[in-house]
Length: 231
Image (cartoon, rainbow, N blue to C red; front, side, top):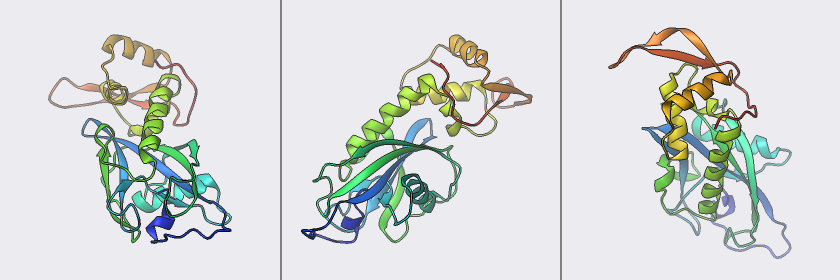
């Protein structure tokens, strides 16, 4: 999160010190038909008891991307996720304990059942619906809004939706992802015609059986970011 110094209980900024550099990571997933994000509960310091996005200081010799990947892996145990740098938040007063410049990221991962790891630094860790977040520490409300706006925009001109889906899925499931993130319904026929015409999906020689008639299964032809006009 953006205030590791606060997490250590520091209250005085040395007069000759330089700003610290941290990363904050907004991790999105889809669960219970809702877009959700991962939050940690701060244990000590001026924001004790508040929720925030996971993150921390960049270590000596570590890249920004490497720090973001590390922080998310420590909390989730997941290595294979989509990660993109968002923006740099550098207001001198964003962390009352120390002048901390935070580079924000957003990340995408399919919903998983494995346990989350809060570690010793946080009081708790959990998923929250994006549209029903608690009061956040630091400037993380602004980071949340920025990340959601970026995600919604990128759905229209990239294929990054693959990062939220398992290897096999139905057309109904991929459309549901778009509808949940965009927060509105899409015309079923038009969406399916467009998504199939783009060549992003490959039909599989099997179906999924459920309460309704069997549904055809698909997989992505490539699971890497590409610019393509989906919407």
